[in-house]
Amino acid sequence: MTKRTYSKSFELMVEERLFFAICKRILSTFEGNGKKPISLILYIARVLDRPIAYFARKLLTRNVSVDRQTVIFIPYQGTYACNPRAIADELLRRRLPYRLIWTTTKEVDYSLYPQGLEIVKRGTFRFYEALAQAKIIIENSQMLERKKTSKRSGQILIQTWHGSLGIKFLDGRMNPNNKGNQLVRRCSRETDFCISNSTFETDVYHTSYWPGVSILQYGHPRNDIFLSNSDNQHMQIESNVRCFLNIPPDTRIALYAPTHNDREHEHLFQLDYAGVRRALTKRFGGMWIIAVRLHSRLQKFEDRWLMDVPPFVYNVTQYADIQDLMIAAEVGFTDYSSWIFDFLLLKRPGFIVADEEAIYTEKRSFYYPLESTPFPISRDSSELIRNIENFDQEAYLLKVAEFLEEKGCIEDGHASERVVDKIRELTR
Image (cartoon, rainbow, N blue to C red; front, top):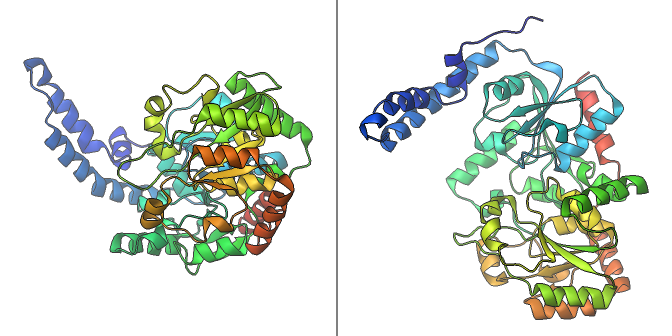
């Protein structure tokens, strides 16, 4: 098939930056006279670019056919992570004849991605062209819906989400205003299938962004690795994490990964790192490091927040996939982040530090009480230290089993296979 070529101006229109580029070039000619580009003019140019880009993308789709063998992955992280990663890995493992397009948020080192993937930066002309071609679109957030980008006739959007049995209300239920309702309508209209791992999560989907959407209770592909019988695979992941941290094989890892607070003034609850480390050694033995991973929305604070931490505290905010960190970690701490509900599938000790619970409950609220989770709950570092020292593994495992049964969890390590089987069915 002959590849269609487009003018540079048309590509700029599609990328939503034609007028901006023109105005910036014109204004730059005045810089030699000491005059700076006028921000208002550039702002107006950006505003004008939006409707122009909308129609340019419509024109682009008229010249591009949907290809049933093309799958595009749009993870909100922009890195090789989460459910999209697990699905892509399964497609590559089976060597199926699909064109697999992985989208990123910035320029990346291609060597960090497996062979068989095309890497495309979002917002570029190549991205919109590939998006128009794909038969299957796989998301784990609502990036397309928030950008008001509609799928084409014949395309299928599979929503895999990035939470799991999470306690926090999703935004669709949290924000009943008109803007929130518009997003709910777009999500329901654009999404063909949601991947769920439990009856609880299915109910959450239907009462938040995706009322009426078909739910596939397959389990979460990203969690298959936790239930894998491949010790070699786990050992390789642990080795990769330890190499990233540059720590010896016998050093034990505790993962501290809080969520964002949905408030104007974000903060990081500073654990008594030294006290927590001593408690870990006292209860579980060995030498420990504490790996801290900030939520993606809080990455801009990492240098400031983690500047003066002790030398045994490591910043892993930039590590690509938190599932790998969970494999390497023997203990986990969070406030209200949903990753801890993936972590419990490993049957390893998990702890909740309920920082400013009253404020968080007022701003976001929970689907169920903190006390109904299997995790020991602390309000401060002193209580966390006591909970670590008094941790009862046998009682914890009983609570984990009861919790998973109550939520109707169906994780069994084969979710990726089911999703790929569904993709094959949809692309015949």
